[in-house]
Image (cartoon, rainbow, N blue to C red):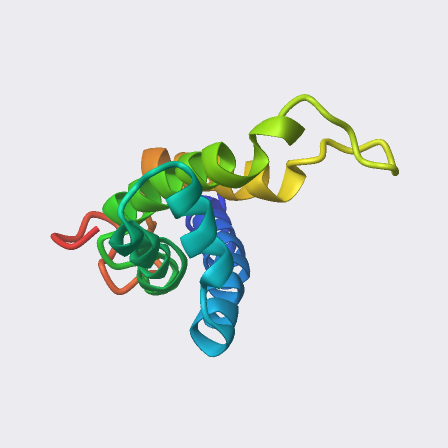
Length: 133
């Protein structure tokens, strides 16, 4: 007996909840930093609002297990943009404790990539083979 569906649930909840907390922070305190990073690249300011899709909407969908693969793909794209905008200089650095400087961003990026490959599993609103998963 395997516990694949339980593992998918744990992965979805972990990535979804941890990323959603970042989104909720931006909802409560604004996203001035994100707007500045977007502007520094010469991109239009409205692109900064995509952070709400990548850090609020997509994580909620991951948690629910609804449109899971699409939501995970959005998170992957979101993290690639975030790494490009804010963390490129840290890409090959280690932290003071010896870990990769981008380990949190790496967890979000590669965890979401794994979810996009695996799907939501049985314990989801969309169901294991459901139309919305």
